[in-house]
Length: 156
Image 1 (cartoon, rainbow, N blue to C red):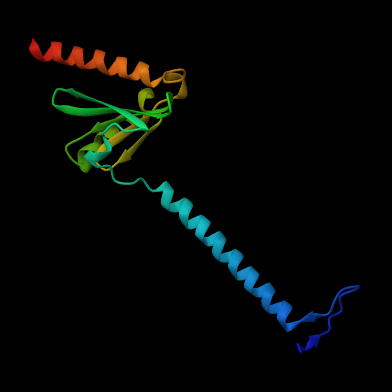
Image 2 (cartoon, helix red, strand yellow; image 1 turned 45 degrees about the vertical axis):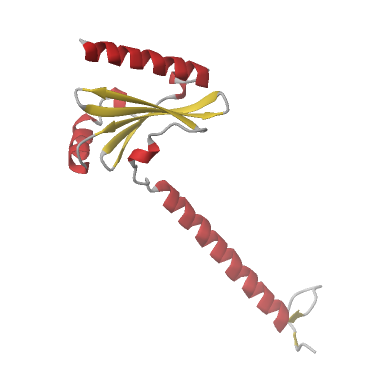
């Protein structure tokens, strides 16, 4: 039988060692859960390195590669079904140092107000007004038009 420890609590059940142990275990579990949630938030806020494999269209995104003057730029539209939910432009530089130097010089430009640095890429997140109302069909038409434009310019 559990030993009863009496307290000066009015109108309550006596607190047993078993109750105290359960309380301490509950507190420990709550602290661990809070620590895990904070860790997950911090880890998610650290930008993951971008690889060339990311720039492949799939069921959740459409990628439009652009090459101008030997520089690679990627327009990445994210979508849910046929509705476009986001647009990011990735400007690729030769290395991290070049991207960082370019970012530092240009970060005050209005076009880069939603920009961040991720390795050798400057990533610009578009305002919702730039893609709101677009569908995946619209993006595919835009892709075809851009490819036609690039092929015409390369032929010249």
